[in-house]
Image (tube, rainbow, N blue to C red; front, side, top):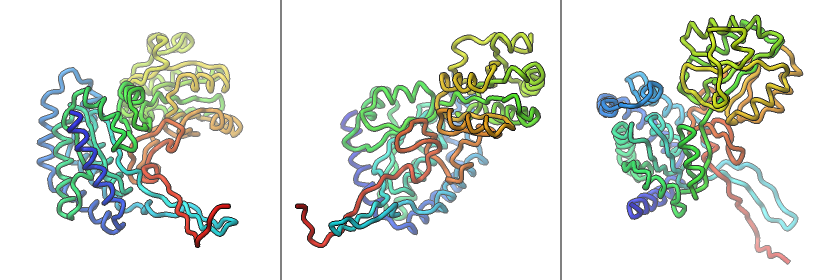
Amino acid sequence: MTELLNKIGQQAKAASQVLAQLSTTTKNQVLRAMADALINKTPEILAANQEDLADTTGLADKFIDRLTLTADRLAGIADGVRKVADLPEPIGNVERGWTTESGLQISQKRVPLGVVGIIYEARPNVTVDSAALCFKSGNAVILRGGKEALQTNIKMAAVLRAVLAEFDLPQDAVQMITETSHELAQQFMRLNQYVDVLIPRGSSRLIQTVVQNATVPVIETGAGNCHIYVDETANLHMAEDIIVNAKTQRPSVCNATEKLLVNAAIAPEFLPQVAQALADEHVEIRGDEQTCQILGDQAKPAQKADWDTEYNDYIIAIKVVNTLEEAIDHINQHNTKHSEAIITTNYEHSQQFTQQIDAACVYVNASTRFTDGFEFGFGAEIGISTQKLHARGPMGLKELTTTKYVILGQGQIRE
């Protein structure tokens, strides 16, 4: 297995050196051809996806939803590739420049990371999104998806590689690891000689496994135990609409809201209102003691573990709090640094919330579902970073680059 990974790593490193020199025009032509090829190969890709869907024993509905491709979903993925082509070129941009006292002309230029490794689960869209973003940013990519989507991932990677070959570019700019053993995954996490950064996408278990075992630098992404706090000054109709959207619009994703905090001053009025709206969408409510007192049979008692659980399902836990400060403390204690929201008409409260909440994205009067590269105008995303170094929040092209300093002299020597 080590020999196989070393070969993949060597091929990716060699391909990355070619990609780093490509013109913007070439990259965009290739990306648009990739999008066209995905559409042209729709029947074959969907057939491969059906092979994966033929054995979903033991998988929860939320994972089957992520795994399933349709013609419309594939068209959306292809459209995302075209949007990446339309994005401004990140490579070669000069971030800043200056002349030193010794006459050296220094510029800081944006360059590719090199080789990016992606470890992910039953999300075949990640295969294409990652390949497109890495290609546009001049990086080779090594993909290791979950066994549940193996046939779909292999087919989509093959389509992209065929397009690279048509343009006389190294197919190894996009490589798929088809061996899904945990042993090989562990070795991949330690492929420092060839992989410049590793990005896990999936469950909190997967992300923590990578963080704890990798020696390759990791950008931590994904897990979303997201909260909405309804302030005592909130517009309750607005709050209801936002909560229902954030919980039910697509509950299986990381930016769906999992917890609701409600100020005690409005809880007797608001909780029955929002509970009915959630019940209409078949959402199970788990509440603290005060919530259960107000809602009665509409809520089940929450357990200690509920406050730290990312459900990815039609479940929400509700807690009544007495103050904004209590809400902030609870969120910072239990969140995963992803996306948090306050519903309020009080400007001072909104400012305190945005300043004190420790998360990549903090919303005022909006759904957490907007934490997404497309919605932020990035064209696509490689994931949602929940760490604080280099990249935070939705990761687009710029987050897949680094910088180098270029120094021009005229014979200067240091004394």
